[in-house]
Image 1: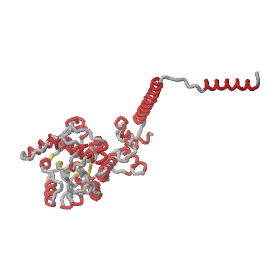
Image 2: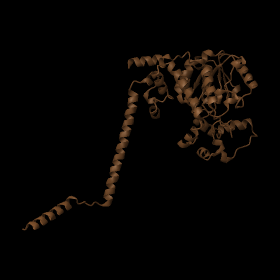
Image 3: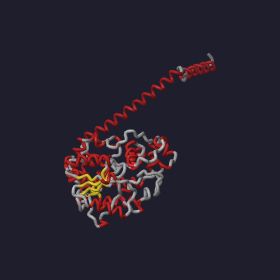
Image 4: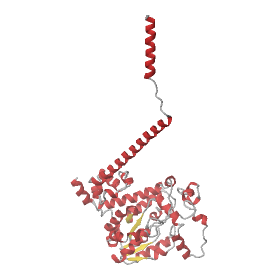
Length: 406
């Protein structure tokens, strides 16, 4: 064989080898798709399983690890997953605890200094209840406590028509009425804070409740359309005009998105298209004209000052155990046995005036509203942090004991 022929033969052999080496073996198109789907499915289920395992491990870690919650009378299974993901948020009990501990303020907490009950000059409770904060439930609890603690529930305020603000003369008359009650009395009314000192009258024991501001206005929207409220109103005024069916069936999500005047919560407005009690701070600010502008920093500041100076307890049903504990510890004359009676009559207390047909509100709608309640939220969180401090103050010995064991 010649040299040229030999080279040609080698080149042909190399080409054939390369052809086999890089040859793509064909697969049916459907088989490829099935393999791809199977691979994606396996990856997805593996991810979900791993994620679930991580969540379970975190839950077990919280339940088994001796932590600050043990010292606060809380156990791991009482912490929701959402709460545990925000454990360092200062607007939670755990977050408040961690902040006070890290800044050295925890050991300086004093239940005596945090208890304004000692400032009261008469043994009478003034519960100037906010609208849509669960005040009916507290009223029901008072009904159970009435005989248990030898209380007198003054019911006149429950029958009074609600006014956004009172004139000076009306404030004096109400303050004089409350000051004249016997020791052990409880006066309840939807009315703003009143300054008894201004009228040289003895100061009562102020209490109230707060609730998430957006949840309050949503609750009011459906409460206004409920049979309970309308039955009461028409019993008081049989000639009151009946609203249209369309109004009763109005969708809240659409009401907000469409810019319906009923669902507009415009900052600094003083007049409302319809009554909606969006100003939670108004119940704590009082009857001054500066209290009226919605979401006003000035109104919020005055409300904070009144809470800090006058209110024995501002609780929240969002923290039921904490609220009842603080009520029992800071106002024992009226709330001794509150936790036990609450447990015994739980269903009766918690379902009073409860709207069980409230539709689901879309998250984006809540977020739209929330942007207009910035200062209202500032006040709400202020009250919650104060409540947590009061709770921590009466648990300091337990906290120190638990920490000494860790």
